[in-house]
Length: 220
Length: 283
Image 1 (cartoon, chains in turn blue, purple):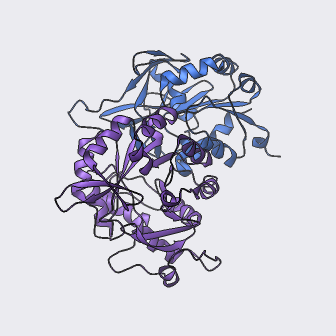
Image 2 (cartoon, rainbow over the protein chains, first blue to last red):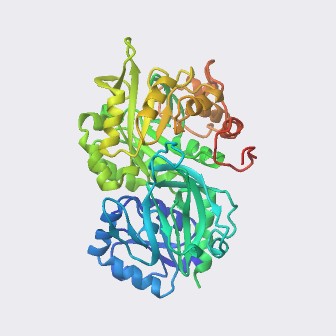
């Protein structure tokens, strides 16, 4: 039996968006998956994925009500591989500006900010960003090379769906950046055992699946 | 991809459907060729209150890792949940939304705005006004499309799939006036659909029509049927098989593949996603 067949990954279901494609991508590379809303399944897992689309405020209250916020924090403290996707990346941050302020899990210092529909030069941008966009290596750090993006070609296109983006307080955690609505923003982070991306690797064709495969290297 | 029962079909003005093959084969083929997204519309579901797409989506989602939008016959929050569970990433709502606009806001709240695509089927009237139709361009509603587009945005739709029924399947080019007017009056992305007959039309929809994305069917389908091997299949005799058997497109279309299309768009200065085997000039 190959290594990945023994690895159990829990995919957190907290009522925010479609988990099916994350599960399919994991199974495609041979991981065993469990889609779950239970804190106990978080503790038992070898790896954890926090996906999600939708509103930050609703997501945090769902996580809290299910007792998952604490479980995720504890899991990450143990040093086991964790992947956040889209809203699952944003929730790791300290706070979001969405409809008044909301506190996040505060595992990465920084804020979640909305794209401006009109950029600094007065150009209009469609918000949400829906579609394929490039990821660039963040040139002032080494996070890309230590992350599952390691062998991904710079400038690769990934699939994005979001209105808000993350602004980490410490730029060392920035793995990739992406340009949209007149700004260059952080599109993925690596902090110790946390890897998280604003884009959806499970919807980003062969390049995205490569990121899942690379994530396997973080399992001991 | 227009679906009728188990088959991929294509009509003109959403009528006169011809069977082109199995949707799964086209989905795999387009995924491998570098498609950015797949849209499946069950073209008769609204008429018969059925949605036969679940099985197709369920099978395709195991192999195809790009976004998939599914529409046709989705009437309730539960219908949406079922199709998302089968593997769709987004749902396209038209008939249900016009009958009950609140379904857009309810669905957006439950599944996130980005999951909800408002599908608008527009027909230009003799007085120049564009009106929205339902049931694949068959049923008149009297609703003016620009007002409706603004309304669906307010209700929480994440994208608009804008089909010109007048142009659909004709190969006579996208309706640029329609696309531009809608795209500029709302702030959510607009996917232009209906009318692409050659690669130049696609560039026009983006550069002149200000579309945020383009949906292409006939150009690709009639190229794909030359490449796909259908000999091993038996088709349900639901529809017109003549075009499939002869593997031909009709004269107004210039079939093309994704590589040619993306290469052309790239040369026009349009930012397109690279696909294997395609060297882009504006990278």
